[in-house]
Image (tube, rainbow, N blue to C red; front, side, top):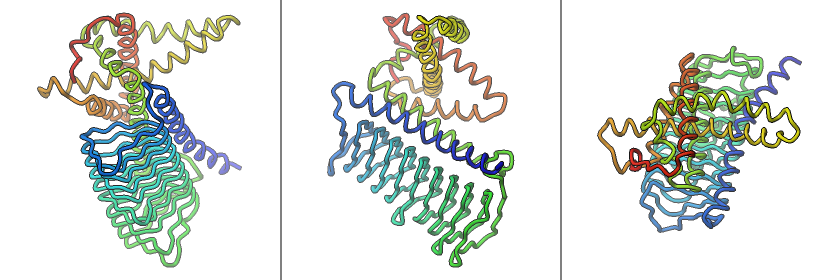
Length: 395
Protein backbone atom coordinates (compact mmCIF):
# COMPACT_ATOMS: atom_id res chain seq x y z
CA UNK A 1 0.00 0.00 0.00
CA UNK A 2 2.86 2.36 0.76
CA UNK A 3 4.35 1.79 -2.70
CA UNK A 4 1.01 2.60 -4.38
CA UNK A 5 0.80 5.94 -2.60
CA UNK A 6 4.27 6.91 -3.71
CA UNK A 7 3.56 5.81 -7.24
CA UNK A 8 0.47 8.01 -7.22
CA UNK A 9 2.62 10.94 -6.10
CA UNK A 10 4.88 10.38 -9.08
CA UNK A 11 1.91 10.34 -11.45
CA UNK A 12 0.48 13.44 -9.81
CA UNK A 13 3.81 15.26 -10.20
CA UNK A 14 3.99 14.53 -13.92
CA UNK A 15 0.30 15.29 -14.45
CA UNK A 16 0.77 18.57 -12.61
CA UNK A 17 3.49 19.59 -15.04
CA UNK A 18 1.35 18.59 -18.01
CA UNK A 19 -1.69 20.35 -16.59
CA UNK A 20 0.31 23.53 -16.07
CA UNK A 21 1.44 23.47 -19.65
CA UNK A 22 -2.10 22.93 -20.93
CA UNK A 23 -3.43 25.72 -18.72
CA UNK A 24 -0.87 28.16 -20.03
CA UNK A 25 -1.43 26.99 -23.59
CA UNK A 26 -5.18 27.43 -23.24
CA UNK A 27 -4.58 31.02 -22.17
CA UNK A 28 -2.40 31.67 -25.17
CA UNK A 29 -4.94 30.13 -27.52
CA UNK A 30 -7.79 32.16 -26.06
CA UNK A 31 -5.73 35.31 -26.35
CA UNK A 32 -4.83 34.51 -29.93
CA UNK A 33 -8.52 34.06 -30.75
CA UNK A 34 -9.68 37.41 -29.42
CA UNK A 35 -6.84 39.87 -29.86
CA UNK A 36 -6.67 42.34 -32.69
CA UNK A 37 -8.81 40.21 -34.99
CA UNK A 38 -6.13 37.56 -35.20
CA UNK A 39 -7.12 34.43 -37.09
CA UNK A 40 -7.19 31.12 -35.29
CA UNK A 41 -4.88 29.71 -37.95
CA UNK A 42 -1.36 31.14 -38.20
CA UNK A 43 0.72 29.80 -41.07
CA UNK A 44 3.93 30.43 -42.92
CA UNK A 45 3.46 28.99 -46.37
CA UNK A 46 5.96 26.79 -48.18
CA UNK A 47 8.51 28.85 -50.08
CA UNK A 48 8.02 31.91 -47.87
CA UNK A 49 10.91 33.25 -45.79
CA UNK A 50 10.47 35.21 -42.57
CA UNK A 51 13.28 37.40 -41.29
CA UNK A 52 13.29 36.29 -37.65
CA UNK A 53 12.84 36.13 -34.84
CA UNK A 54 9.44 34.57 -35.58
CA UNK A 55 6.43 34.75 -33.27
CA UNK A 56 3.37 32.57 -33.90
CA UNK A 57 0.15 32.10 -31.92
CA UNK A 58 -3.28 30.63 -32.68
CA UNK A 59 -5.35 27.46 -32.57
CA UNK A 60 -3.39 25.92 -35.44
CA UNK A 61 0.15 26.97 -36.23
CA UNK A 62 1.75 25.55 -39.36
CA UNK A 63 5.24 26.56 -40.42
CA UNK A 64 5.96 25.23 -43.89
CA UNK A 65 8.35 27.99 -44.93
CA UNK A 66 11.69 29.22 -43.57
CA UNK A 67 12.30 31.34 -40.49
CA UNK A 68 15.72 32.98 -40.30
CA UNK A 69 16.06 33.30 -36.56
CA UNK A 70 14.78 32.04 -33.24
CA UNK A 71 11.15 30.93 -33.48
CA UNK A 72 8.57 31.11 -30.70
CA UNK A 73 5.20 29.34 -31.13
CA UNK A 74 2.28 29.01 -28.70
CA UNK A 75 -1.04 27.41 -29.64
CA UNK A 76 -3.27 24.37 -29.54
CA UNK A 77 -1.62 22.47 -32.39
CA UNK A 78 1.82 23.34 -33.74
CA UNK A 79 3.26 21.79 -36.89
CA UNK A 80 6.77 22.64 -38.01
CA UNK A 81 7.43 21.28 -41.49
CA UNK A 82 9.81 23.94 -42.76
CA UNK A 83 13.27 25.18 -41.79
CA UNK A 84 14.13 27.11 -38.63
CA UNK A 85 17.52 28.80 -38.84
CA UNK A 86 17.79 29.20 -35.10
CA UNK A 87 16.33 27.63 -31.98
CA UNK A 88 12.66 26.64 -31.65
CA UNK A 89 10.54 27.31 -28.55
CA UNK A 90 7.11 25.67 -28.75
CA UNK A 91 4.30 25.29 -26.20
CA UNK A 92 0.97 23.71 -27.13
CA UNK A 93 -1.35 20.76 -26.74
CA UNK A 94 0.05 18.92 -29.75
CA UNK A 95 3.47 19.64 -31.23
CA UNK A 96 4.64 17.88 -34.39
CA UNK A 97 8.10 18.67 -35.77
CA UNK A 98 9.02 17.19 -39.15
CA UNK A 99 11.20 20.02 -40.47
CA UNK A 100 14.80 21.07 -39.88
CA UNK A 101 15.82 23.16 -36.88
CA UNK A 102 19.38 24.50 -37.08
CA UNK A 103 19.55 25.01 -33.33
CA UNK A 104 18.07 23.59 -30.14
CA UNK A 105 14.45 22.51 -29.76
CA UNK A 106 12.52 23.38 -26.59
CA UNK A 107 9.02 21.90 -26.49
CA UNK A 108 6.32 21.62 -23.82
CA UNK A 109 2.85 20.22 -24.41
CA UNK A 110 0.45 17.31 -24.09
CA UNK A 111 1.62 15.30 -27.11
CA UNK A 112 5.01 15.91 -28.72
CA UNK A 113 6.27 14.07 -31.80
CA UNK A 114 9.72 14.70 -33.24
CA UNK A 115 10.47 13.16 -36.62
CA UNK A 116 12.47 16.02 -38.08
CA UNK A 117 16.02 17.19 -37.62
CA UNK A 118 17.75 19.26 -34.95
CA UNK A 119 21.39 20.24 -35.30
CA UNK A 120 21.57 21.04 -31.59
CA UNK A 121 20.05 19.54 -28.48
CA UNK A 122 16.45 18.59 -27.85
CA UNK A 123 14.47 19.38 -24.68
CA UNK A 124 10.93 17.96 -24.59
CA UNK A 125 8.36 17.76 -21.77
CA UNK A 126 4.77 16.53 -22.06
CA UNK A 127 2.30 13.75 -21.39
CA UNK A 128 3.39 11.63 -24.35
CA UNK A 129 6.79 12.38 -25.86
CA UNK A 130 7.94 10.48 -28.94
CA UNK A 131 11.23 10.71 -30.80
CA UNK A 132 10.37 8.96 -34.04
CA UNK A 133 12.57 6.55 -35.95
CA UNK A 134 13.33 9.10 -38.67
CA UNK A 135 14.35 11.87 -36.28
CA UNK A 136 17.89 13.26 -36.40
CA UNK A 137 19.30 14.86 -33.26
CA UNK A 138 22.60 16.72 -33.32
CA UNK A 139 23.67 16.26 -29.71
CA UNK A 140 21.95 15.24 -26.46
CA UNK A 141 18.25 14.53 -25.89
CA UNK A 142 16.29 15.46 -22.74
CA UNK A 143 12.73 14.15 -22.45
CA UNK A 144 10.19 14.00 -19.60
CA UNK A 145 6.57 12.86 -19.54
CA UNK A 146 4.15 10.15 -18.54
CA UNK A 147 5.10 8.09 -21.59
CA UNK A 148 8.44 8.64 -23.30
CA UNK A 149 9.25 6.68 -26.46
CA UNK A 150 12.74 6.96 -27.90
CA UNK A 151 12.45 5.31 -31.30
CA UNK A 152 15.03 7.42 -33.10
CA UNK A 153 18.82 7.49 -32.63
CA UNK A 154 20.46 9.85 -30.13
CA UNK A 155 24.10 10.50 -31.12
CA UNK A 156 25.28 11.45 -27.62
CA UNK A 157 23.60 11.17 -24.24
CA UNK A 158 19.96 10.55 -23.31
CA UNK A 159 18.41 11.99 -20.15
CA UNK A 160 14.79 11.06 -19.54
CA UNK A 161 12.17 10.73 -16.82
CA UNK A 162 8.61 9.43 -16.88
CA UNK A 163 6.17 6.79 -15.74
CA UNK A 164 7.08 4.51 -18.65
CA UNK A 165 10.21 5.05 -20.71
CA UNK A 166 10.83 2.92 -23.80
CA UNK A 167 14.19 2.89 -25.57
CA UNK A 168 13.98 1.43 -29.06
CA UNK A 169 17.04 2.85 -30.81
CA UNK A 170 20.76 3.59 -30.70
CA UNK A 171 22.05 5.80 -27.89
CA UNK A 172 25.56 6.93 -28.82
CA UNK A 173 26.59 7.81 -25.26
CA UNK A 174 25.18 7.24 -21.79
CA UNK A 175 21.50 6.84 -20.91
CA UNK A 176 20.17 8.18 -17.60
CA UNK A 177 16.56 7.17 -16.88
CA UNK A 178 14.15 7.74 -14.01
CA UNK A 179 10.86 5.88 -14.43
CA UNK A 180 8.35 3.53 -12.89
CA UNK A 181 8.96 1.19 -15.80
CA UNK A 182 12.03 1.08 -18.05
CA UNK A 183 11.79 -0.88 -21.31
CA UNK A 184 14.68 -1.74 -23.64
CA UNK A 185 13.46 -3.41 -26.82
CA UNK A 186 15.41 -5.63 -29.24
CA UNK A 187 16.47 -2.50 -31.16
CA UNK A 188 17.88 -0.76 -28.08
CA UNK A 189 21.63 -0.21 -28.18
CA UNK A 190 23.42 1.91 -25.57
CA UNK A 191 27.06 2.55 -26.44
CA UNK A 192 27.80 3.97 -22.99
CA UNK A 193 26.50 3.29 -19.48
CA UNK A 194 22.88 2.79 -18.51
CA UNK A 195 21.95 4.40 -15.19
CA UNK A 196 18.34 4.12 -14.12
CA UNK A 197 16.29 4.79 -11.01
CA UNK A 198 13.16 2.68 -10.78
CA UNK A 199 11.20 0.52 -8.33
CA UNK A 200 11.38 -2.27 -10.89
CA UNK A 201 14.24 -3.86 -12.78
CA UNK A 202 14.34 -2.82 -16.42
CA UNK A 203 12.38 -4.91 -18.90
CA UNK A 204 15.28 -5.74 -21.20
CA UNK A 205 14.78 -7.75 -24.38
CA UNK A 206 17.33 -10.37 -25.40
CA UNK A 207 18.42 -8.30 -28.39
CA UNK A 208 19.08 -5.13 -26.38
CA UNK A 209 22.75 -4.28 -25.72
CA UNK A 210 24.56 -2.02 -23.26
CA UNK A 211 28.24 -1.55 -24.03
CA UNK A 212 29.10 0.02 -20.65
CA UNK A 213 27.89 -0.67 -17.14
CA UNK A 214 24.29 -1.00 -16.09
CA UNK A 215 23.55 0.64 -12.74
CA UNK A 216 20.13 0.18 -11.18
CA UNK A 217 19.09 2.26 -8.17
CA UNK A 218 15.95 0.67 -6.77
CA UNK A 219 13.41 3.13 -5.44
CA UNK A 220 10.01 2.84 -3.80
CA UNK A 221 8.10 4.67 -6.48
CA UNK A 222 8.42 8.43 -6.47
CA UNK A 223 10.70 9.40 -3.59
CA UNK A 224 13.17 12.21 -4.20
CA UNK A 225 15.31 11.25 -1.22
CA UNK A 226 16.16 7.87 -2.72
CA UNK A 227 17.11 9.24 -6.15
CA UNK A 228 20.71 9.57 -7.25
CA UNK A 229 22.31 13.01 -7.37
CA UNK A 230 22.47 12.83 -11.17
CA UNK A 231 18.75 12.11 -11.40
CA UNK A 232 17.93 14.97 -9.06
CA UNK A 233 19.81 17.34 -11.31
CA UNK A 234 17.99 15.97 -14.34
CA UNK A 235 14.59 16.53 -12.72
CA UNK A 236 15.65 19.98 -11.56
CA UNK A 237 16.71 20.79 -15.10
CA UNK A 238 13.33 19.76 -16.49
CA UNK A 239 11.55 21.87 -13.90
CA UNK A 240 13.69 24.90 -14.79
CA UNK A 241 13.02 24.32 -18.48
CA UNK A 242 9.28 24.15 -17.86
CA UNK A 243 9.43 27.33 -15.77
CA UNK A 244 11.29 29.20 -18.51
CA UNK A 245 8.88 28.06 -21.23
CA UNK A 246 5.79 29.00 -19.21
CA UNK A 247 7.27 32.42 -18.44
CA UNK A 248 7.99 33.05 -22.12
CA UNK A 249 4.45 32.04 -23.06
CA UNK A 250 2.90 34.44 -20.52
CA UNK A 251 5.17 37.26 -21.70
CA UNK A 252 4.24 36.55 -25.31
CA UNK A 253 0.47 36.51 -24.67
CA UNK A 254 0.51 39.80 -22.74
CA UNK A 255 2.73 41.36 -25.40
CA UNK A 256 0.14 40.44 -28.04
CA UNK A 257 -2.52 42.25 -26.01
CA UNK A 258 -0.35 45.33 -25.41
CA UNK A 259 3.00 45.61 -27.15
CA UNK A 260 4.27 48.28 -24.74
CA UNK A 261 2.98 46.69 -21.51
CA UNK A 262 6.27 45.23 -20.31
CA UNK A 263 8.37 48.21 -21.41
CA UNK A 264 6.05 50.60 -19.59
CA UNK A 265 6.16 48.44 -16.45
CA UNK A 266 9.93 48.16 -16.00
CA UNK A 267 10.85 51.85 -15.70
CA UNK A 268 10.03 52.39 -11.95
CA UNK A 269 12.80 49.98 -10.92
CA UNK A 270 15.42 52.32 -12.41
CA UNK A 271 13.74 55.71 -11.94
CA UNK A 272 12.21 55.24 -8.48
CA UNK A 273 14.00 52.32 -6.78
CA UNK A 274 13.16 53.25 -3.16
CA UNK A 275 9.53 53.96 -3.96
CA UNK A 276 9.34 50.70 -5.91
CA UNK A 277 10.66 48.66 -2.97
CA UNK A 278 8.41 50.41 -0.46
CA UNK A 279 5.31 50.06 -2.60
CA UNK A 280 6.07 46.45 -3.39
CA UNK A 281 6.66 45.51 0.25
CA UNK A 282 3.44 47.21 1.34
CA UNK A 283 1.45 45.58 -1.46
CA UNK A 284 2.95 42.16 -0.78
CA UNK A 285 1.83 42.27 2.86
CA UNK A 286 -1.40 44.27 2.65
CA UNK A 287 -3.06 42.64 -0.37
CA UNK A 288 -3.64 39.14 1.10
CA UNK A 289 -4.68 40.74 4.41
CA UNK A 290 -7.34 42.91 2.71
CA UNK A 291 -8.49 39.98 0.54
CA UNK A 292 -8.83 37.81 3.66
CA UNK A 293 -10.97 40.45 5.38
CA UNK A 294 -13.23 40.67 2.32
CA UNK A 295 -13.75 36.90 2.39
CA UNK A 296 -15.18 37.21 5.92
CA UNK A 297 -18.24 39.02 4.56
CA UNK A 298 -20.80 37.57 2.18
CA UNK A 299 -20.84 40.70 0.02
CA UNK A 300 -17.05 40.84 -0.11
CA UNK A 301 -16.43 37.22 -1.12
CA UNK A 302 -16.39 37.90 -4.91
CA UNK A 303 -14.07 40.87 -4.44
CA UNK A 304 -11.81 38.86 -2.15
CA UNK A 305 -11.51 36.04 -4.68
CA UNK A 306 -10.79 38.51 -7.48
CA UNK A 307 -8.17 40.24 -5.35
CA UNK A 308 -6.46 36.93 -4.55
CA UNK A 309 -6.45 36.06 -8.27
CA UNK A 310 -4.93 39.41 -9.20
CA UNK A 311 -2.41 38.98 -6.41
CA UNK A 312 -1.26 35.65 -7.86
CA UNK A 313 -1.01 37.12 -11.37
CA UNK A 314 0.96 40.08 -10.07
CA UNK A 315 3.48 37.80 -8.37
CA UNK A 316 3.87 35.82 -11.61
CA UNK A 317 4.28 39.04 -13.63
CA UNK A 318 6.91 40.18 -11.11
CA UNK A 319 9.36 37.56 -12.38
CA UNK A 320 8.98 38.76 -15.96
CA UNK A 321 9.34 42.42 -14.96
CA UNK A 322 12.52 41.85 -12.94
CA UNK A 323 13.94 39.50 -15.60
CA UNK A 324 13.47 42.20 -18.26
CA UNK A 325 15.17 44.75 -16.02
CA UNK A 326 18.15 42.42 -15.47
CA UNK A 327 18.41 41.72 -19.20
CA UNK A 328 18.27 45.41 -20.12
CA UNK A 329 20.84 46.23 -17.44
CA UNK A 330 23.26 43.60 -18.75
CA UNK A 331 22.88 44.79 -22.32
CA UNK A 332 23.54 48.38 -21.24
CA UNK A 333 26.62 47.34 -19.29
CA UNK A 334 27.80 45.67 -22.49
CA UNK A 335 27.34 48.96 -24.36
CA UNK A 336 24.19 47.95 -26.26
CA UNK A 337 21.59 50.58 -25.40
CA UNK A 338 19.26 50.42 -28.42
CA UNK A 339 17.72 47.97 -30.84
CA UNK A 340 17.93 44.90 -28.58
CA UNK A 341 15.29 42.22 -29.06
CA UNK A 342 12.86 42.05 -26.12
CA UNK A 343 12.62 38.27 -26.32
CA UNK A 344 16.39 37.86 -26.03
CA UNK A 345 16.54 40.41 -23.21
CA UNK A 346 13.86 38.50 -21.29
CA UNK A 347 15.45 35.11 -21.96
CA UNK A 348 18.78 36.21 -20.50
CA UNK A 349 17.11 37.68 -17.42
CA UNK A 350 14.95 34.60 -16.83
CA UNK A 351 17.94 32.27 -17.16
CA UNK A 352 19.83 34.23 -14.51
CA UNK A 353 16.87 34.17 -12.10
CA UNK A 354 16.27 30.45 -12.61
CA UNK A 355 19.92 29.65 -11.93
CA UNK A 356 19.79 31.67 -8.70
CA UNK A 357 16.59 29.87 -7.65
CA UNK A 358 18.40 26.53 -7.75
CA UNK A 359 20.81 27.60 -4.99
CA UNK A 360 19.52 26.78 -1.47
CA UNK A 361 18.82 29.78 0.80
CA UNK A 362 19.67 32.13 -2.07
CA UNK A 363 16.46 31.04 -3.80
CA UNK A 364 14.35 32.35 -0.90
CA UNK A 365 16.12 35.70 -0.99
CA UNK A 366 15.72 35.91 -4.76
CA UNK A 367 12.02 35.08 -4.54
CA UNK A 368 11.44 37.81 -1.95
CA UNK A 369 13.44 40.44 -3.84
CA UNK A 370 11.72 39.62 -7.14
CA UNK A 371 8.27 39.68 -5.54
CA UNK A 372 8.84 43.03 -3.81
CA UNK A 373 10.51 44.83 -6.73
CA UNK A 374 8.28 43.39 -9.46
CA UNK A 375 5.09 43.96 -7.46
CA UNK A 376 6.11 47.53 -6.69
CA UNK A 377 6.99 48.31 -10.32
CA UNK A 378 3.65 46.91 -11.48
CA UNK A 379 1.64 49.05 -9.04
CA UNK A 380 3.54 52.27 -9.72
CA UNK A 381 3.50 51.87 -13.49
CA UNK A 382 -0.28 51.29 -13.47
CA UNK A 383 -0.88 54.33 -11.25
CA UNK A 384 1.39 56.55 -13.33
CA UNK A 385 0.62 55.08 -16.74
CA UNK A 386 1.09 58.41 -18.50
CA UNK A 387 4.70 58.76 -17.44
CA UNK A 388 7.10 58.40 -20.40
CA UNK A 389 9.31 55.33 -20.16
CA UNK A 390 12.29 56.90 -21.95
CA UNK A 391 14.84 55.04 -19.88
CA UNK A 392 13.76 51.65 -21.15
CA UNK A 393 11.91 52.65 -24.32
CA UNK A 394 14.46 51.10 -26.68
CA UNK A 395 15.70 47.56 -26.18
